Amino acid sequence: MESVLVTGATGTLGGALVDRLVEAGWRVLAATRRLDDPPPTAEGDGTIEWVKLDLVEGTGIEAGVADADAVVHAATAPQGDTMAVDVRGTERLLDAAEGAGVEHLLYPSIVGVGEIPFSYYERKREAERAVEASPVPSTTLRATQFHAFVDELLGTVAKLPVWPLPTELRAQPVDHREVADRIVDYLADGPRGRADPVGGPAVHRLGELASAYREARGLRRAVVRLPIPGGVAKGFRAGKATRPDHAVGTVTWESWLAERYGGPPESVTDRAGASSG
Ligand SMILES: NC(=O)c1ccc[n+]([C@@H]2O[C@H](COP(=O)([O-])OP(=O)(O)OC[C@H]3O[C@@H](n4cnc5c(N)ncnc54)[C@H](OP(=O)(O)O)[C@@H]3O)[C@@H](O)[C@H]2O)c1
Image 1 (spheres, rainbow, N blue to C red):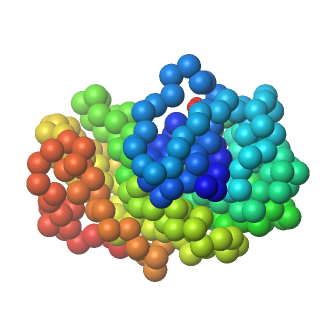
Image 2: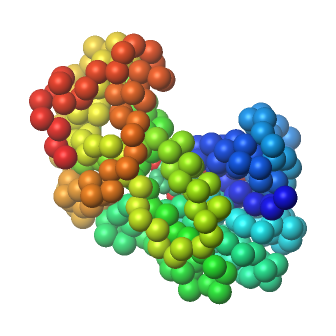
Image 3: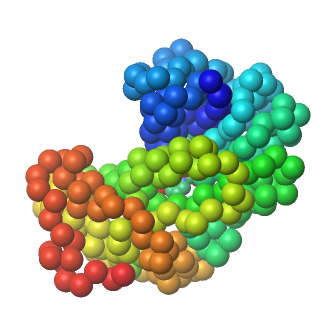
């Protein structure tokens, strides 16, 4: 049975990956900084072992890769010390993977890194470069924002009576479970360098996504356009975080909302006029 180390195994993508890899028959080494309360996972033909690993402390990395044929590096710290976790942590992991003879490292990244001058995206681009420069055979897979991320983002304003939002930013959210499916396929196929990106089924303005979210949750709130200056917002407005030419995801934002909050999936386009795609 082949073994795969999954960093960030408690995260949104990592959690979906662990379940799918177990089902696909892998022996999964699921990494977390906190071993006390590992989450439950799906039953499958494979097996799962939780391992303690901290990319910043540098602990558990060599032990984690020692037995791994492949690595999916899904750990990240968008709100934390991205230089320490995403850049230095990735370099540490690559060094250890090279030493252990890992045959395939798969790195999930984000559509728009390298084009939008957002500091987290700049760190992700640095990590991509480290992956690409490493002797460890690799696959880098960029995806658009996850539905779960947009959901969480809108959750931060949900309690406010008025939602001040940069309504004109464009996003093409994708279901992270579909990204996980793609990763499982790529692990079976072997290293391919830069893979085709994975985008959600449609490009929307954030204002449209917020309107659908508001209705799905039955909230009566005004969405107010918040103008944001600067290069980051300009990049998102220009659609640099989207890849409509790779709209391979099938789960729409409306379906995601219906699954999460109940009710029939209603089309953003039906409700809010033409989609901005
Ligand atoms: N979110 C999106 O919309 C999106 C879109 C496209 C691509 N991606 C990419 O997909 C990957 C996964 O993203 P996600 O949103 O699923 O992540 P997430 O839910 O934020 O999870 C991040 C994970 O990183 C782990 N972690 C944080 N600091 C660590 C450290 N110092 N050492 C070891 N592990 C650490 C955490 O594990 P513990 O706390 O258990 O240690 C956690 O499981 C990332 O590469 C991200 O850039 C995300």
